[in-house]
Length: 178
Image (cartoon, rainbow, N blue to C red; front, side, top):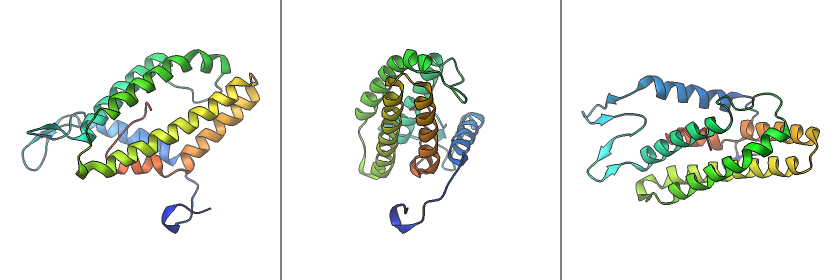
C-alpha cells in the first residue's frame, strides 16, 4: 500500500494521537507572546493583520471552542477504553449537531489564496473524521457491542495510519474536537 507521492505507508501506532496531544499541550503552555517582528500573537488568535486574524488563527479558535463543547458532551475524558454502544448513541446526536455547526462556521471563513493549502488540509481532516463517524454509526446501528468494538479499533487504526492528522498539524491547525 502506498501513500501519495509513492512513499510507502508506515504504521504509526499511537504516534499521531501522541503528537496531537503534545501539540495541544505545547500550544496551551506557550500562551501569548510576541513574534520576531513585534506583532502580538498567540496560538488562539495568531498574528493579526489590518484585515484581522489569519484563516489558521480563526480555524484554531473555532477548533478550541469545539473541543470544549465536545468535552462537555462526553464528560471531559473521551472514551479511551471500552465504549458502550448506549453511551455512543446517547452522545452522538449532540456531537453531530456540534460538528454540523462547526463545519458551517468553517465554511463561512474566507480562504485567502495564500492559505489554500491549510484549508485543503482541514477539508481532508473533516472528510477523514466523517468517514470515521460513519463507520461507528453503522456499527452502532447493529446493536452488537462486539461489532462496535471492532469498528472502534478500525477507526483508531485508520487515524493512526493516515497522514491526514499530521498534515493538519503541519499546517498549524490543531483540531482535536473534530
